Image 1 (tube, rainbow, N blue to C red):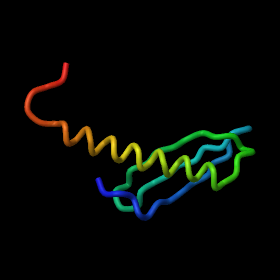
Image 2 (image 1 turned 180 degrees about the horizontal axis):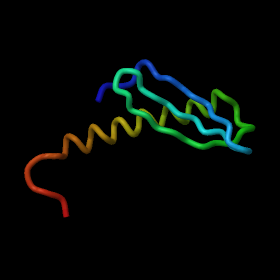
Image 3 (image 1 turned 30 degrees about the vertical axis):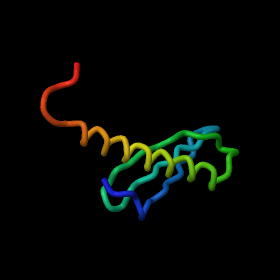
Length: 72
């Protein structure tokens, strides 16, 4: 998967927390985190983007390992 360049960030307040979704526009890949409502928007956004990049890299790694045989 390519490195996300265009990312949509969505903030959804839930009680004393906030759910933050990060979506890669190019691939549609989506992750979410739940953070403290008192945390700054920039902090929450940075964590969500970091998780998006991590999960996309992890998926690439898993796809590269796929091949002959199977894992037990």
